[in-house]
Length: 331
Image (cartoon, rainbow, N blue to C red; front, top):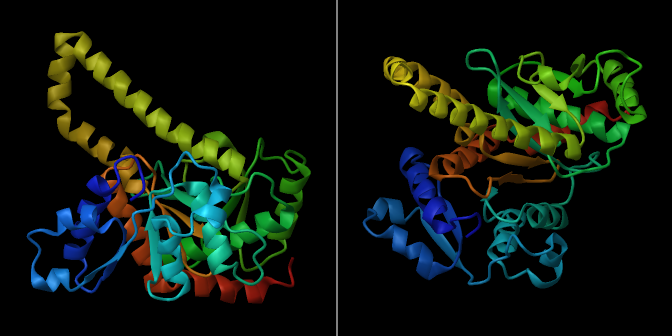
C-alpha cells in the first residue's frame, strides 16, 4: 500500500515477479478490495501462490516514524514486518514510510548479535561496463562510531560478496581526502580497525568524486553523507537527461544527430535508469527487509523484490551473523 502510487505500482510489479519466478509465493498485506482488482485474469496456478492479509490501515509517509510502535500496529507496514518475525514470510519489501519501516524492523526482528545498529545499503552504477558500487549507510544512522563503521563494512562486504559472487568485496571509507590525517576522528579510527582486520579487503579512503570509479565495491559512510550521495546522484542523472533533451531540441542538426544516436542514448539511459538500482536493504536485523523508493515505477519495485530474492538465496542475515562471530575480537 506504500509509495506515491500504492497498488497501481506495487501490484503489477508483484504479478510480474510471480510469473517470472515460478517458485515464489506472495503474501500481499493491505486493503483486500484494492488488491483483488489486480488479480482478475490470473490462472489457478498463479492464484494459489498468492495470499492476502487484509488491513485497511495504512501508515502514511507524513506521520512521525515513532508513531508506528504506538498507533500503527494494525497498519500494512507493521503487519508486513510481523510476518517476517513469525516466519510466515521470508522477506518484506515496502515502499512505505522509511523511518517507520526501520523502527518496526528493529523492534520486531532485533539486531544480529554483534551489530549495534542496522544500516541501509543501496546500489549505485559504476563507470565501468556492468559495474556497480554499494553505499551504506544511506539514511538509517546520522551519528556513527568507529565500531559501527567497522560493522557496516563487515555487513556490506558480506552482502556484496554473496549477491555478486565476488570472493572478497573491496571496502572503502568515504572521506574528504585520501590522506590518513584527514576526516573526522571516527572515520580515522574506523580506518585503523579495518586495516587490522584480515577478513575485510580494505582499500582505504575514497572521495566523493571517486564513488563511481569502481575503486571499491562497498563504500562506508554515515547516514547523513550517504543519503545526500544517493539523492544527489539521482538528481544529477535527471539534470543530464534534461540538458540532453533541451540541447537536441534547440537545433535541427542536433535532432538529426540525436536520431542517429538513439541506440547509444538507449544504452546510456538503461545504465543510468534509477529503477535498475531501486531497493535499499536494511541490513543488521534478523531478516530481509528491502525499502523501495516511494516514487519508484513498476520496474523499480520489481527490482526491489529481486534484491530480496537474491539475499534469500544466499541467506545473507545468516552469513552476516557468522562473519560477526569471527571478527568480534577485532572490535
